[in-house]
Image 1 (tube, rainbow, N blue to C red):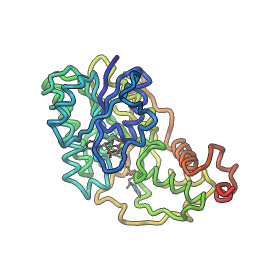
Image 2 (spheres, rainbow, N blue to C red):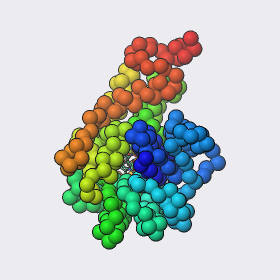
Image 3 (cartoon, rainbow, N blue to C red):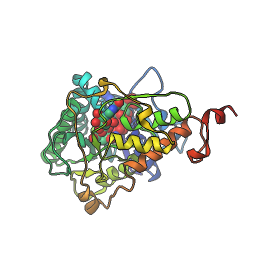
Image 4 (tube, rainbow, N blue to C red):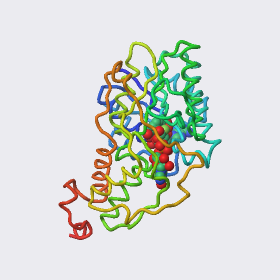
Length: 342
Ligand code: NAP
Ligand code: G4F
């Protein structure tokens, strides 16, 4: 049985990846942070009491800021594959907490790589690199595009990208960078723009609220479906040789287009509900990210099938369901409030 260690297992991607690896028969180990409240909601459905004989998911307390703990865990677990997904992953927040972002999203990656080296284990290493590294470089962006990060988050990811490549070259480690463009899902954190929009569309439709405050609507993003992207991560670690790959849909739409699609799904006009708050602007913005994933298609046989508009519909439906609506098309429900009261 293959063993994998996932950092960031409680996050959006970590939960889908854990699901995928368990379905492939792996024993999965996850690093989780100690918190005063439960932070494992996204993986609750996968959890089996570790005392049970058939348990294959094991969680360990740890933090990317604690290098010694990472060494001891890696020495003990001896994973065949390590997926380093943990990070302070919010771009806007990285302007508020630049030092913390550098410590986790940047230096955290070299702590993981160094832990693999010091533990003296043979393992394949995946680094969650990001299209934010391209920043101001115009689209389409691929593996050869110049990095020009526009945030402390983007700069920290560039550092992680290069140390991953360096450990591959310096120590012959099977270490790869997955340069992933934005990918979303019903499990997306509620403060990223897609989820903020789909959640608001559902709640406004249900009469639970009436407006949502947003920042820049002109930014273009290449939004794909997270459940498909974790398959690409896994394929990168199954390749014969280590290499870096872009994963993207190849189609970019604006935040405004995403709003249109999400609100139309529930028969609303977003102009009636969206308000502008400059708090959500970034000191420097990334105007347009549209990826060219042809290398991943050719070498890994990976291709995205869900684009940004389909994703908006899928996420709105899931958010309707989350507030009590049970899966019929939205137009079957004339007024969710009366439906809920019934
Ligand atoms: P996410 O939902 O924000 O999850 C981040 C995960 O990292 C959570 O499990 C979080 O734990 C954990 N974490 C944060 N700081 C940590 C620390 N100091 N030590 C240990 N764990 C820590 O992010 P995601 O969307 O799944 O993204 C996964 C990775 O891919 C991230 O590295 C992100 O930067 C990168 N990425 C994401 C996208 C995207 O569009 N989603 C695109 C490109 C790259 P808690 O649950 O306790 O907070
Ligand atoms: O949803 P976002 O916060 O995602 P962003 O900044 O593109 O970063 C995400 O994708 C990266 C890959 O390119 C990941 F590496 C990173 O970890 C993260 O997952 O913002 C998308 C766009 C931005 O242009 C932002 O200015 O939406 C714009 N936006 C407009 N109003 C907003 C809002 N973003 C947020 N979060 N909240 C708003 O109210």
